[in-house]
Amino acid sequence: MPELDPSFLDLPLERLTDAALSRAAELGCSYADLRVERIRGAGQEFRDLALESSSTSQTLGLAVRVLFEGVWGFASDIALTAEVATRLAERAVATARVAKPLTSEMVELADEPVHADARWVSAYEVNPFDVDEAEQQARMLALSETLLAAPGVTHTSAGVEYVLENKYFANLAGTSVRQQRVRTLPRLTAIRVGSSGFDTMRTLAPPAGRGWEYLTGTGWDFDAEVAQLPEILAEHVAAPSVEAGRYDLVIDPTNLFLTIHESIGHATELDRALGYEAAYAGTSFATFDQLGALHYGSPVMTVTGDRTVEHGLSTIGYDDEGVAAQEFDLIRDGTLVGYQLNRQMAAEKQLGRSNGCAFADGPGHIPMQRMPNVSLQPAPDGPSTSELVAGVERGIYVVGDKSWSIDMQRYNFQFTGQRFYRITDGRIVGQLKDVAYQATTTDFWRSMEAVGGPGTYLLGGAFNCGKGQPGQAAPVSHGCPSALFRGVNVLNTAAEGGI
Image 1 (tube, rainbow, N blue to C red):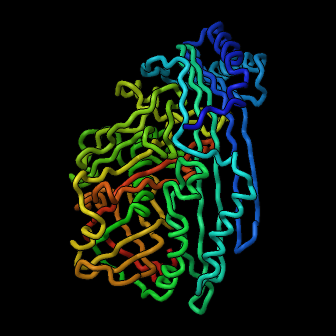
Image 2: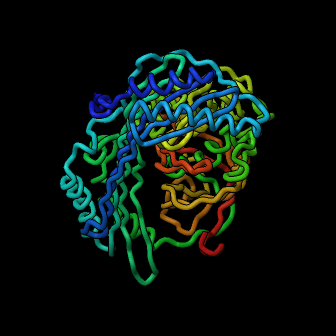
Image 3: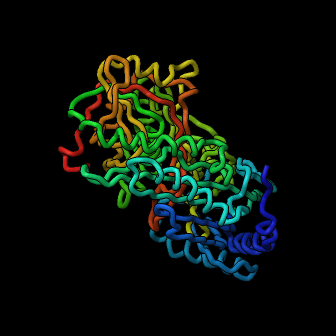
């Protein structure tokens, strides 16, 4: 198991804490916290057998947040000195004083136990920053070479991104937490330029809370997938265009994770349901008055939020309010039963303890409610993907994510994908193309007849879920099994103008 980076632990964390929090207490703050964050990022991009770009970045800073007379104040800086930490506490209080006349209600926070001197490291084996860049490039170029050597592949595009995030949190109550997590995103695309135009096919490997071992065989077999990609691309090029209409869909987790993200993940953020994001990212059709009553989906639908699943992009030991990571239900047996919360919203709506969904993407931003890993649960004894396909007379098997569109209430949507396979009389009989499925959120999830078993389950996700003003990006995973949906409307994207 990796250990916390000593160079981060060597920062003057205790001195910064004492300076900021003692000053906040002297000024009369009912609550105060301090975060010190170091976020290292790196990435490489390749075209054919050449390195196009290589980049590294580092963000390092501290932030102080206070509750003064029931109003939030916040300040941050890049200088890690006790003098700066003291000034940040004073600036945060000054900010709260300015904001107080504009605030109609005093902020209260849900209770949370004290977590003193807690430490947490994510589940990875090899820190990518410990791997020589030449070795990293050689691995990506070898995979690209395999693709480019295959018949029908004109060009390749490849890239890898990885992040090492260290975070320290302390508050007036006595909680202090040191954490470290790693995440990696590899991707390879085969490109064909021919008489039919420009066609692509990308790897399905999701981003993951893993280290460099992800590229060398732990968690995903990139060599096997890359070897199959040219044949899949050739089948796609030759495939007929879909006839628009209603079809039964068997949706693979490599596609369904994104539908979960957009139609469930964002819709069950309580700040959206309460209208906090209305001016920027929209609201949610799943309003608070429907908690416990909204028939979100079919009885086979249970969706959890959690910050604990191994290798999840949103997995963490403690959130940015010092709340310990948890797993909780959002939808149970098709009914909306919960929301994603931070401590303020949990107290405001008298929902008990926060479920640990506060996050800031760096020291320069204030924490807000952000998505945990939101996942559709498999049936314990559920069918395999092939068994789901066997139950379909006329349908489509959807694999891989691509483009999507959804309205500001997370209700009307359409999604495309990477690969589409025609199902006839329970058998896959070849690829289709130009497919998009369209529905409202509740009609779609209510049409879900069956979910696959644990053997079909996969953790997908994204590095860059956006939210807030100023905008913040957060990594998040979504697990799900294969699932069967009956009578879903399918559009022909070519006929619709290239959706």
